[in-house]
Structures are given as C-alpha cells and as structure tokens.
Image (cartoon, rainbow, N blue to C red):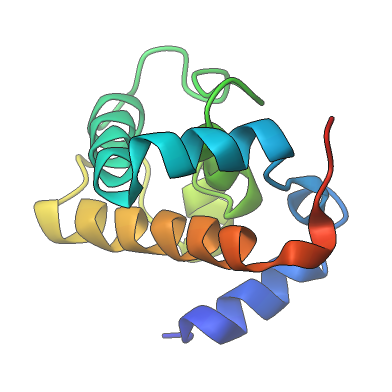
Length: 125
C-alpha cells in the first residue's frame, strides 16, 4: 500500500489529475464553510456517488467543478468506480465498506488541505 505522499507523487505525473486546483473562489468557500462542513460534504458525495456497487451514471456522476470536493475527487482519481479501480484496484460491482469510504474521504481532505496551504497556485479561474 502506498503512502499519501507516494500517491500524491504518482497523481502529479498525470497531466489530467494534476490539472485540478482550488481557485480563489473555492478557497473562499472552504474558508467560509470550514473544514468540518467540507468533510461532511465529502462524506455525503462519497456515500452517494461511489459507495454503491453500481452507482447511477458511473463515470459521469461527478461534475468537474461546482464544489471543492468535486475537484478533489477528480484530482485524486476518486471520481468514479472506474477510476478507483484503475488507480487503486478497488473492485467494481462491490459496495464500498465504511472503512474504505473513510479512507477516500481522508485522502480527499488531505488534497484540499494541501491546496489550501499552497499559496503558489492562487488562481481566479
């Protein structure tokens, strides 16, 4: 099993995955809502969009923008069951355990925390 840092390094080598970042507006949203609320949103999104064995519209269920967690899901290859399978070997057709859901949420939050701490990528797009 890879560490978070090793996984972030692997994801950084993907042109697509590394193209996601939090904008100034995203950062303001996170600051306004607070990390506890963002975590609850992440838990809800993972439970609704990833946890079922066969999520509705799998592969198209996670928007590219509109919420910082959506960006985190794409940046961390946690946006659909296909990406979870390709990047992390999570089996398709099996509901996600509570433990795995928590690990995914923790990784999403780690990505958001890194983005919030990274003042060099301030973008207003």
